[in-house]
Image (tube, rainbow, N blue to C red):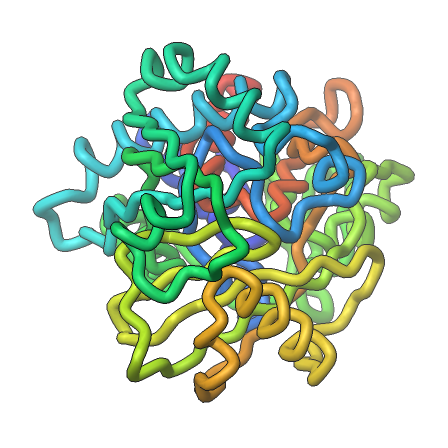
Length: 357
């Protein structure tokens, strides 16, 4: 079977590895777009709490935890990522940064009551959860926290990875398994002859075609009169240098604040629906600094060192779209991971493999 994957982000490469491991011929089409979300992500793996930069209907939901259907997917994805890291990457030439960084989740009164009811349930999933109910308790474990923060939850078990390093590891593992990567841009699909047209007029035959082109997915699907409900959502992240701040945890409230191995503090992320550009803006920088300083006031004195912007493929309900594009066509789509594509990718790759098989 000749399987062709369009897109070399985390969905595309994870799917390609799944298919090649079952003995199929697999070719990945790589458009060499450096601004894909997979390369610029925060790299947070957390199946319990929502993320800053979520679609508005999810972000504005009263609960700090994920909606039920999203939590189920998140747990499967998180567990699959843990399993695959230990089985295929840890201790190999393809190992990537996979760090345990506990999360200090900022709470209000409603959040506090909700989490108190769910401590046992969250613990049963393998996460350690401690409720903190005074500013003194919080300051005791994290210096520099705002005096306005009086309630928080400390959860152990969440992970962080280096997104660029992870993407490189996937690509190298795929190539080591005999996978083929072609640089080019997919232009059209010949349904009758089952051929993909790339660049000007090069044609690649396929038995199965998997389209993993993120927010650009409908550009190609329109060629075969198909469409999925994925919209572009621009997200920006800044990295700051703070000599007087040492973070012991990933701090999460209106934004994410986490210190990484580059000795910079990452602040993430903005969310602009239907904005299809990767231009860095002063407005986003100011927004992120303002939100972060509500948690750690000393952030106001830090220096911005780096700033990234990219376009994520998002859906209204926060759930990725994984399905056959047209019935009995052999053409499949995987997109809509939003800010959680890295956590979801191995599980999504398995789903596509099962559909193709």
